Image (cartoon, rainbow, N blue to C red; front, side, top):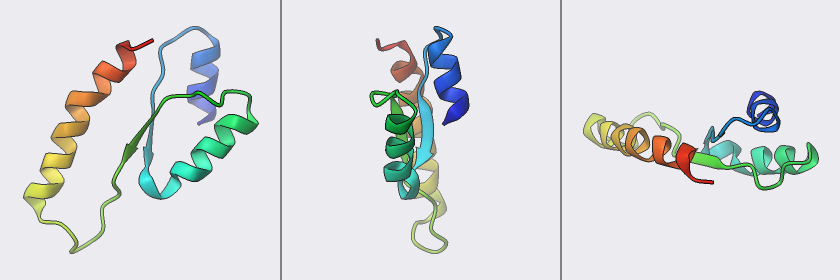
Amino acid sequence: MRDGIHLLKAGHPVVVFVYDHFERAARAQAKGLGVPDLRLYVFPQYTPGALSSSEEEEKAVKAAEEFPRLLMEQ
């Protein structure tokens, strides 16, 4: 979070990758550090046995496709 905020304040495009379990804490920290609109990419955290390896692979492919686009959005 802090690295992302420092990069953002230095003028770099930033999207912080955060597991869904930590989204609420990440948003609170961003707000507390003066960047309430910090862009987050919320990724579903792996739960052993909950998903098949192909479903985990699909989540990773989706993130790899979406993440660069988010960096380019202003």
